[in-house]
Image (cartoon, rainbow, N blue to C red; front, side, top):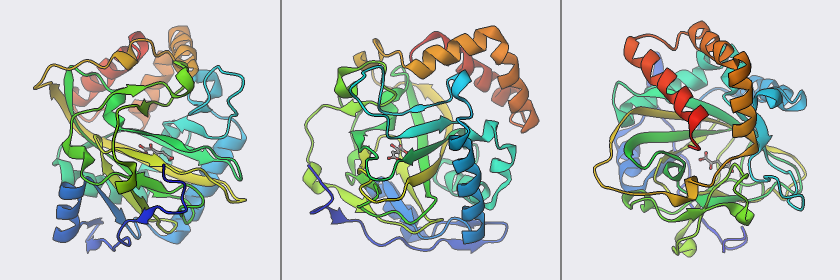
Length: 317
Ligand SMILES: O=C(O)CCC(=O)C(=O)O
């Protein structure tokens, strides 16, 4: 296992190029992502904007915003009492900070997502995660697609923005290069607890081939949704915070038959809480938030979004 002592570092983050209103990847960066399944970039936005983002997101965590609607919960600890809560996350912080998607950070991320996935790439959701100082737990190795419906093929990527410098010591992301070229491997619930938000890859793979992506505040790493990745523990005396945007084009029916049995038993505390909230009228609040931020630009976008909300409410995806 990579403890952080011996882990190999990924190539240094590189700069994006100015593309007028936003930024774009160079040809080398584009090809690196396609071949390796990830890329780290030095600066997605300005340091002033990053300080503002960090302060606003910190405030959401402090006020425990979203807890009542199942949007804020520790991402690893489920119901097991002996698992310490050390890594809270907020699903869709844009619901509480409507200007989040008007930032340069978001615009640049969206432009890069379109470059990598195609012009119809949209933001599927966003997320903020803190790893608490001194004991922020490691993120288990996983592929993001392991959380998704196996009857569909996904065309998605994550853009993970560092809100302070991230290093091996405070829990930067670790990637297994080229692992995005494989199918989704077998996953299970960490600590055997189906109420945990997280999933863990339990199939064998070569962790020694992993690389760690150290990046400065305002930099980002981008990874393909099949990329095997984890985040180290935070052993420093300051919290580690990240803002994550997931972009994708509409899923298509799966080209191969597959099953993800680990999703069958999964019912996280947040899902149960969210279902109760939606049924008590939250569904209207959720729809209103989407209208307010202009998510429904076309009938396709509206139908996709409503279908996703119902699927999330009824199933365990
Ligand atoms: O921040 C972390 O430690 C994990 C983030 C992650 O797994 C992701 O963005 O896909």
